[in-house]
Amino acid sequence: MKKISIDELSNTIMEELASYSEEVTEELKKDVKETASECVSMLKQKSPKDSGEYRKGWKVAAVYESKKDIRVSVYNSKKPQLTHLLENGHATRDGGRVEGTPHIAPTEKYAEEKLMAKVKVGLK
Image (cartoon, rainbow, N blue to C red; front, side, top):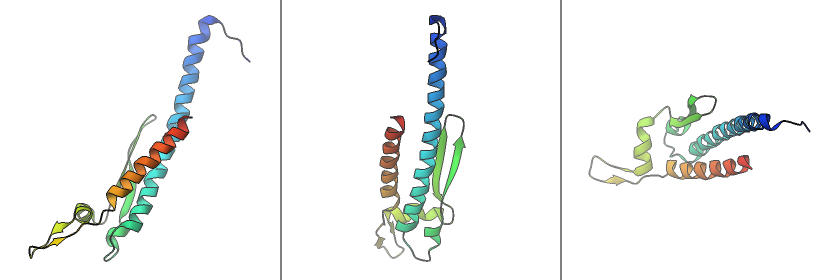
């Protein structure tokens, strides 16, 4: 064990906290990327399949990443205009209605719960 003077105590504590912060940040960024990839897999399975193009279009991209922050986006690259219509349903031209197939909201809820569980484990 290293002996430190009382004058060096605050610097030593700050260094240790900075080190811990970097470790936690890296772990959380990894968890966010993993959870987003799981979302893409789930959406590819749960999405409505007509021609299959919509289902195959799900992707994940890091929108922003810095040393202390990450933001990812899960999106449909092939048929983005259909996400709202297929999730919530829509009116037809003949006055009828097509019921929606909820696939995005359940996946989002799952991702939120999964990520929060990973964060709790990562912080312990």
